[in-house]
Length: 121
Image (cartoon, rainbow, N blue to C red; front, side, top):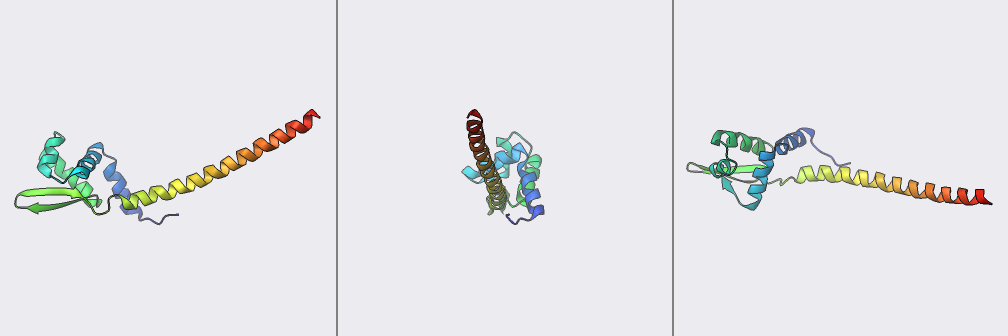
């Protein structure tokens, strides 16, 4: 199974649980933007957007830098790599379980066909 840090994952998943923060990540995937531009895009106060950015920054999903009075945001360095690895680990586990279930169902169907054929004789 994939090794992970539960606190880091909790922080990341909590950050992306909010639709506005997911929208911010999508927007920053196109180009970096100032906090003011993001606040305007999402029709919210500057204070509200700063709170969202802080949550994303704490999770490592967004990085900010300040030039003069303008704070600019861009996607963070992790780019959800840690979270994707965690999800992929579980996906592989469930795919293996479903493959085993398919094999069992096929075996039972074959057995049922043989048993049904034997009863007719």
